[in-house]
Length: 180
View 1 (cartoon, rainbow, N blue to C red):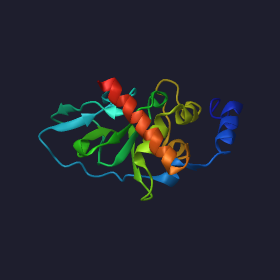
View 2 (cartoon, one colour):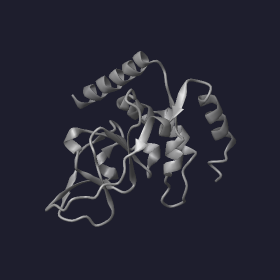
View 3 (cartoon, rainbow, N blue to C red):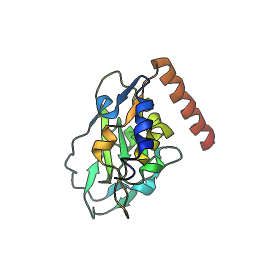
View 4 (cartoon, rainbow, N blue to C red):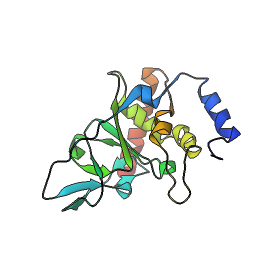
């Protein structure tokens, strides 16, 4: 409560709302939980498999059984970690990762509107713009996390479409250079 009711957070939110923006929940919708089909082996994505530097799923652990509740990943979606939110544990789920399963600590979202640039939202969620909002929304002492309500209330800046495209291109080129 101390962080959430902090005057700095209130000032931050007020400042962010002075510019064109939308709440995350207005741009994205939660992906409903799907039943995970039985398999001999599962490809599991946990916190450690999301690279906070590049925002990508780096690998999946192959396991013969699921020890705890998991969520089925679907392509063309974004996963956001409720834990370790300050590290930007946010990733796009590609066609390659479709059918993987992830820790229940991830929330999964897809586009609510046809013209939402999912890559731009992914970039915005990994930026200091969103991470600072989340920093003041965490709860808990030993296992600090952010809730679905706070994630949905995250303010996403909405510059013109060509600016969004340039931002995504810049981030993707920096990631490509780091890969090389």
